[in-house]
Image (cartoon, rainbow, N blue to C red; front, side):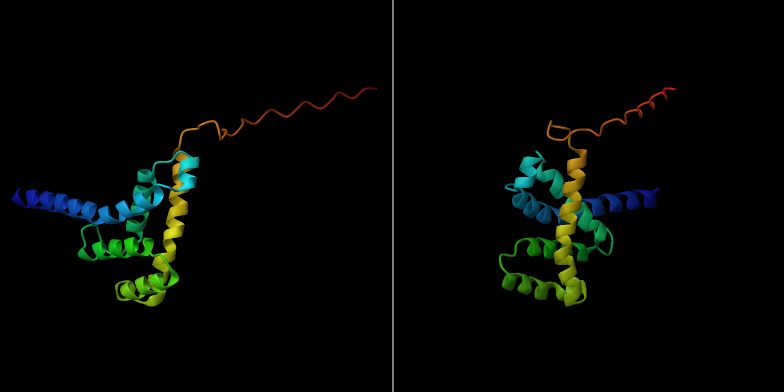
Length: 151
């Protein structure tokens, strides 16, 4: 019984740590999306898209929820999102190349943000209720009957 309680407490603690490690990245994403015109046009919540992106990024990371290295990965992605120039981007890549294992992998991680963003915006658009701008697919109409041959 004590082992089961210990396992349950460990799982809850790991879940709590995993949630906390994602918070910084989520906040950066929400701030980035507040003025995004596409989100405004489709009436999407910045929080919804940010949550999706955090989950997408988390699923691409090595390790497991609560792994101490994952917090470093989330910090790296937050840094990649906050670059202002190409020189700043190069500094961010250099800063995290050891974490990702190589410069190439750090670059791939930085550029994957766009893929995650497009995936999540697509999901959010698909899940959004119709607001009159998009129409539901029309039901297929039956084919018209062929005209009768006259003799």
